[in-house]
Length: 237
Image (cartoon, rainbow, N blue to C red; front, side):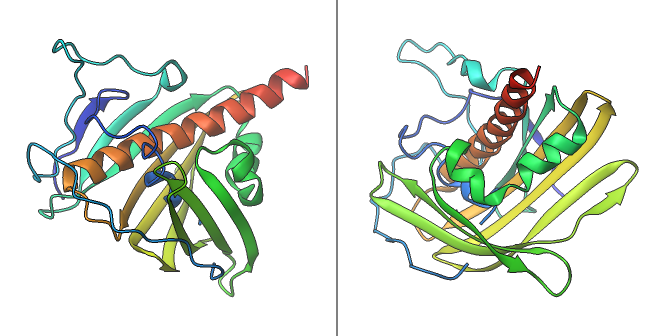
C-alpha cells in the first residue's frame, strides 16, 4: 500500500470550476437506463502525470484559500499502489446523531436536491445480498457531459463502532468507480463521517487532474451531507 499524502482541502490543482466535484461526486452513490453523453474532451495541460495532488496557487504565487463550505474537513490522497492514481478521502464531524447522518447518506433519491452536480439518482431495489441497487447521473463541463453509473451499495459492515458502506461498480460510461462511506458515533449529538472515493471516467484527462477531482469531490460530498443534517437539526429545534 502506498503512502498517503495529506492536503488541506481547497489547496488543489487548478481545474475548470464546472468540472470541479462533478467527477468524484459520481461515486458517492450511483443503474442501467438512459446513457449520458460521453464527449471527447481535449487533454488538459498539466505539469506532469505522476498522480500528485498539487496545491493550487493564485496568479501571484500565493496558495489558494479553502472554500468556506469546506472548513473543518480533513482530506488525504490515498495512492493506489504504483498506478499513479489516488483515492480521495475526506472526513468531517457532523453535529447530528449517527441515525440522522446515516439517513442522509442512504437517501439516494434525494441526492439531486443537495449534492452538487447530481442530475438523477434512483434506487432500483435491493440486491440479493441485502445491498442497494443504485442508478445515478452527474453533469460536468456546464452540462455538456453526463456521466452515469450503476452500482451496488453493499450491506453495512460494523467493526469497532464504525459503520462501513462500500460500493461495487456494475456498469456505466465511466471506466471505474469505487466509494466507501464510514460513519462513527462520537456522542449522542455528533458523528464522524468519512468518504473515500475513486472515479476514473472515459475522458482523456491527466492523472493529476483526476486525483485532484477525487479529492475535491469527496470533500464536497461530506460537506453536503454535513449541511443537510445540520440544517435539519436547526429546523427541528
